[in-house]
Length: 97
Image (cartoon, rainbow, N blue to C red; front, side, top):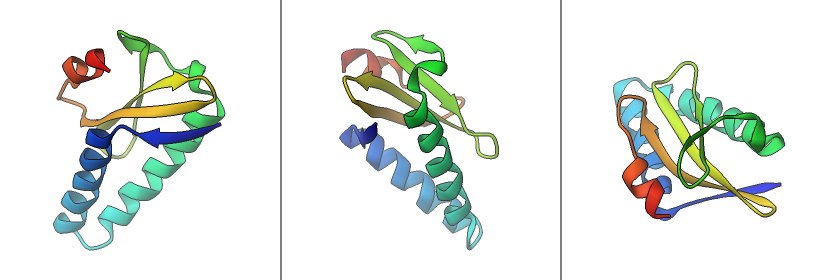
């Protein structure tokens, strides 16, 4: 199974990389490493994580960073619909997708 980003989710993801790198050199890379490991887990078993919002939006919480990956399964791929801070709720956009 492969994955792809909703356009807005890609922007959110890149904003997180830039933010963490601006805080401490190398922290953006560490965020990216954890994000990529999380996406690998999602792609290997997307149904194992709970549905968090309609329409069938699931989420995965990063452990080190306060970021949640919101995604949905589409046939043979995973669409990442939001990459949000844990305190923010991107459900209004996710619900329209």
